[in-house]
Amino acid sequence: MRKATYTHACIVERKAFTIGIACESRMVEADYMGIASGRDVDKFAVTGLTFVKSELVDAPYASEFPVVLECRLLHIVEIGLHTQFIGEVKDVKIDGACLDAEGHVDVGKLDPLAFAPDTGAYFALGALIGGAYSIGKSFTTETSS
Amino acid sequence: MRKATYTHACIVERKAFTIGIACESRMVEADYMGIASGRDVDKFAVTGLTFVKSELVDAPYASEFPVVLECRLLHIVEIGLHTQFIGEVKDVKIDGACLDAEGHVDVGKLDPLAFAPDTGAYFALGALIGGAYSIGKSFTTETSS
Image (cartoon, rainbow over the protein chains, first blue to last red):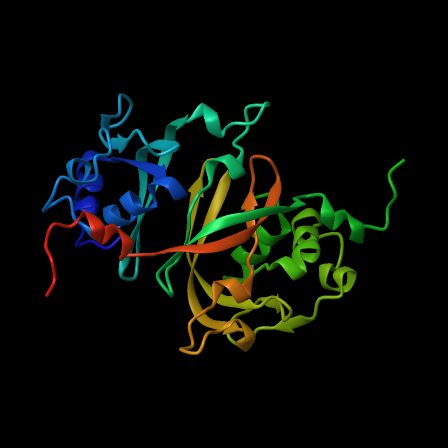
């Protein structure tokens, strides 16, 4: 995050932040969040998103985003033009509709946005194409019994 | 990265690392890279990927990955069970077939993998669904002339 942003100042002062995973159905609201500054406007009022004050950290979140992480600030790392904030996740709130039968996040149901900064574009997630830590085993010479 | 990994030790010792963006056509090789350890096997020899010694930093990369970042180690941040390495990108090598007419990365041509760690799955990227810093302007009340 650049130092000039209002969010930067809020995170440093409150030692807390939240992260909401933006999904396709909230793409326009999420994009507005990245255009406007909380210094000038009430982004929740403008977009109609619901302002929720976290009970765990000193920061708000929008209840409409399907995954929200509430974080306590742990480290501040200065990297060139940007500051990196590293937080301890105090809680993860997930819309139950995005979970599979075993309680794992079903990424297909979550429908998260992928952001391509170079061209300024949002992409949807595509098909499930392979199992991690699995398909690469075709290169191992050992055969399991 | 966990401290127990061979890669962790190499990065600390050489103060350098490279990052290759895995694409769908190299998904099996990329997955194997995450399964096997360089302490035990020559991952390049096993997968058939081409070993290239970076001329800029003390680390190798596979020439088959369409985007490669060569990084000099800047910061080491200890975060719970993992170490975060932050690097200065000394060069980015991109397969020309993944660029658009203006020289930007065409994410659709790049075809990067998305990794869902919770369920251990790789997803393809889907359709371009919106313009960033653009679609959210529908919430702004000002009209530009």
